[in-house]
Length: 189
Image 1: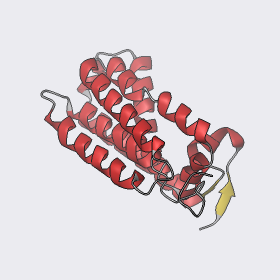
Image 2 (image 1 turned 135 degrees about the vertical axis):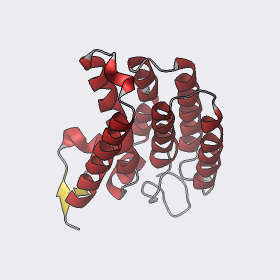
Image 3 (image 1 turned 180 degrees about the horizontal axis):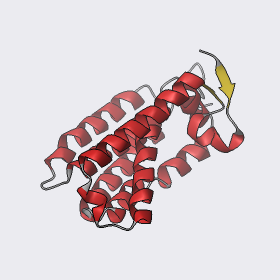
């Protein structure tokens, strides 16, 4: 597929070069899943001010779209070559807490999912350049996929968003999927 140069202000989202097809799929996926959840659970936003529900849905869109974007070669390699950016990216991801707050959902659950995801992402990130990184990320992701749905009374909208948040930050982002930024000995350049 033809690659296009991404403007510098979007490098953190799409990397430096990305195919138009990948961008379209990323945005379509994020928009379609956000819309589907909104249409399936309209009661979540009925009593909220429009600014609050709009901001929550934009954050949800970012979670869903970012989950796919982080799996692309361009985005993965962009962050693989930038250790500081990886740490900042992980640290600033409080989206799931904001979504729960804006939609007046269970903050304790969202904080628990956020804490597990962020700690797990830092562990996986610390293994950058090690052969065990993908396996450890897979273990942590599997544990999260197992315990999050067991939380009693979690609204399905928040449950789905929490699961994608965890996949986005802990696995899709924190894993160096394509090996850029690693030398032949398997250590970080």
